[in-house]
Image (cartoon, rainbow, N blue to C red; front, side, top):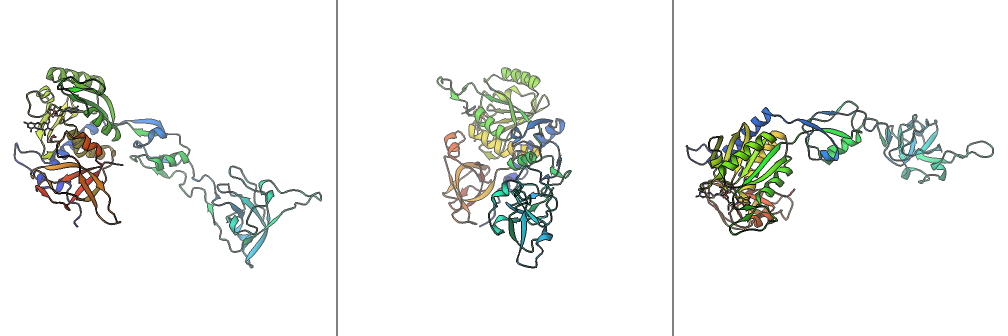
Length: 448
Ligand SMILES: Nc1nc2c(c(=O)[nH]1)N[C@H]1C(S)=C(S)[C@@H](COP(=O)(O)OP(=O)(O)OC[C@H]3O[C@@H](n4cnc5c(N)ncnc54)[C@H](O)[C@@H]3O)O[C@H]1N2
Ligand code: MOO
C-alpha cells in the first residue's frame, strides 16, 4: 500500500498550462493564498480583550508570561503525613512520630516541629520544616486519628495527648511534594502569541489567575448570494424558485473557520443592482474579504461576472470538479472571491481554496485531518480534473490498517442530501479516469 500521494500540488493537473487552459488546483490555491496574505499584510488583524470562555477557539494576540509561580506554593500531592525526611532516616524499618495538628487544603500551616508528622491533605500547603509526604496508606495506623481534623487535645495535666504514627524509614526529600513553580515559574512564557486557545490553554490561563486574554480580531467577511431563483428558507417557493442553501452552508463554514460574517445578502440577477449594493456594503462595512456565490459561469445572466466586468477580478476555470468556475481579485482594493452557485461547489471551493489559505494566513482553521482510504466500489472521474467526491469513511478494523470510503451520491454539485450524509471529501486526482474498487485514495475528514 502506498502512502497518500494525492495532494493537489503533486498532480499532473498542477503543471503550468497554456493560456486559456484551466488553471490547476495548486495554481488557484496559490493565487487565493497570495490574495489573502496580501490583504492581511495590508490590514493586519487587531486585538481585543475577552473573558476566557469567549476566547475558546480564538488566537492569542500576544505572548503571555506567568504572573506567578504555578503551583504558587509547595503542597502535598497525597493525603498523608507531612514530615521532615531527616526524622525518617532510620535505622529501623519504621519510625514512630508524634502526630501534629492537621493541615487542610486552603490553610496556612504552622511550622512542623522536629519529631512530628502533620496530617496533610492533597493540595494543602507544606509547612516549613517539612520536605516530604508519606501517603496515609503507608502509615500505621493507615487512617488519620480523629484528632487529625483539629489541633492536638490538651489533657487535664496540661500535657498534649498526642497520638503517634509509625512511618516507613528512608523517605527521600521531595517525595509527593509539588514544588512552588514546578508547573511553570513566575515570568516564564506560558503561551506564545499565535496559540489557538483550546480548553487546555484556557485552563492554564485560569490556573495562572488570568480572567481575560487578548485575542486577535477575526477576519470580517461580506457574504453575497446571487440569483433571481434563490429564496430565503422559510418562505414559500414560486414556480422556478429554490431555497437558498449557500448562505447557510458558507456562513456555517466561515464561522466554524474563525471568521465573522458581517452581513449576508441574496441579490437578484441585476448586474447594476449587484454593483451598487456591493459598493455600498464595501464602503459601510470595510470587510477583509468578499465572497459571492453564483453568477460566474457561461450563462446569459451571470450577475457577478457582468457586474464586475471592469473591476480587478478575473473569472476563470480551475481543473477541478465541482468548483470549476472561480473568480478572484479585488473590488475597491478589498480581496474578493467568487464561488460557483451550486451548493456542493461552494463547499468544495471553500475547502480546497479558502480554508487552507485562511489557515496559513491566520493560524485558523487547522487543516482537515487527511487519511488514506480504500474505495469500496469502482469510480470514474474526468482525467483532466481533480474530482472531489463526498463519501462515508469507515475506520480500519484493526489498528495500523487502512480505512475504507464509500462514495455517496454522484459527482453532481447539487447533491446536498448526499453531502449531509457524508463525513469525508474524497480526492480523485487529475491524470487518470478510472479508480477500481480497492484503490487507495486520500480523504479529508469533515467530522471533528
Ligand atoms: N455552458 C456551461 N454551463 C455551465 C458550466 C459550463 O462550463 N458551461 N459550468 C457549470 C458548472 S460546473 C457550475 S458549478 C455552474 C456554475 O454556475 P454559476 O456560478 O453561474 O451559478 P448559477 O448559475 O447562479 O447557479 C448554479 C446552480 O446553483 C443553484 N444555486 C445558486 N445559488 C444557490 C443558492 N444560494 N442555494 C442553492 N442553490 C443555488 C442555481 O439555482 C443553479 O442550479 O454552472 C454550470 N453551467
Ligand atoms: O464545477 Mo461545477 O462546480 O461542477 O458544479
